[in-house]
Image (tube, rainbow, N blue to C red; front, top):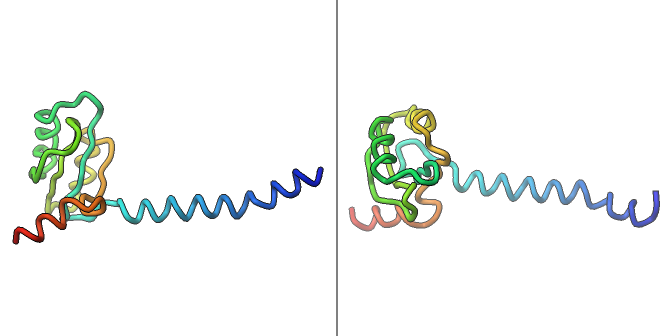
Length: 110
């Protein structure tokens, strides 16, 4: 091994740990919390009407339209709501409060 290869290989483990730590923090911040508002993303091209029908079919209720036509901010008290959303075609489910929007706005209205 050359000196450059040895030097570069000494950064692999610390770099991997750094990337893993950042991904873990992002996941912990964005993971959905049961009975709290979540942002649900459906396949591109899904209309708000289709997305809402899937949310209602999964046992949820609409809080607000999302920033994109295939996203909604929704909530449900059902424990299996996230599983049902995924079965209905949801691509991504993230905590709505994590991006600073839904939870803080609702709290100020109460």
